[in-house]
Image (tube, rainbow, N blue to C red; front, side):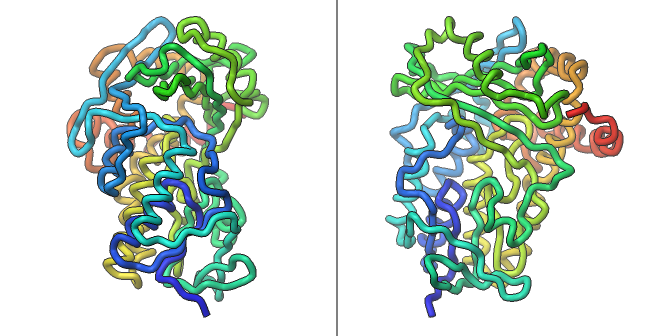
Amino acid sequence: MQRRDVVVIGGGPAGSAAALRLASAGASVLMIERGELGRDKVCGDGLTPRAIRALEALNVPIDAAHRTDGLRMIANRTVRELRWPGVAPFPAHGAAWQRRFLDAHLVEAAAAAGAEIRHGSDALPALEGDAVVGVDVDGERIHADLVVLATGATGTAARMVGAVRDPDEPFGLAIRTYAASPRHAERHLEACLTLRDGAGTPVPGYGWIFPLGDGTVNIGVGALSTMKGFRTLNLNHLQESYRALVRSSWELGPDLERPRAWRLPMSAQRRHGPGWVAVGDAAGLVNPMNGEGIDYALESGMLAADLFVANPATTPERYDREIGERFDAFLRTGRRFSFLVGHPLVLRGGLRLAVGTDAIASITLQVMGNLVDSATPGLGGRTMRAADRVLGALDPALRRFRAPA
């Protein structure tokens, strides 16, 4: 009978962070990834200052990534270019790096720390009753004290244990491609907050250009399921519309690959159970206000590993509790806010407010950079905690009067 202390299903940032941390602490860990090393992942490729801090905690250098110093936010004719604030414990810089390079780099770091890596295999949780006792892969069962689900957007493995998106909560869709640009080495990410669909309806979401420093930029758009007419939204048309808007200013060349879309879950009905925990996107840890989740993936993977090293028996319950204490209020507020901005009139007014002054734009920057959580000091933290209380009281009405999809 094969046995490991921990088996990780999925080799993205969340899975690699868990495997790296576990192996560094001396645990026997097997990480199973269905793709081959260097497989691509559809993503915006942005690394927030929060993600940089997590990578530093993992002792993973990212010298090959393109450094970013801030965010340029555009709302109609208003343009605000702000630097990352450098509010402790986060650094005053981020980065942009294609996911096929970032993910491969993290997998290699986990392997160098002693983690066993298996590529090109599909693993599923092995169940005995309602408990996960290991994984079934390639015709064999491997027993483990803990299985870490790092499977990204929900699939068969997540469905088997109930780690699926809550159907009553919003989700997001995004699409991106790459293009050559002479501005590829700029140090500010760019986000256009005023998008419209083919009918001219304001879209709760944003268009982005993330310079990669390698001659190219990542260009894409994302939208929330709470928008009016979401079911008829054509992401390819929205991408084309945004591309036309920025083609001249960024001197964009032709698309270097066909635009590719993906879904952002933003919630999970369960993120732990006997013998297992879900991390990253599989746990619904995606900011509803920007679609970003790499930093949460890294942090949740590290947390699961650290708790296992401290006490394997209590890991699932402690993990769920500590993740909740760290992120639930902010993510809950973001989901409720998405119901609010699904209404075009509210969205238009909200966007004018979001970048109306430097002070308010600074709070927007913290939100867009995932720099707000339950422990955030200052005006940004106080604002989000107040929003959590107010939107909590309004939650039934927000759901009842949501914009027609």
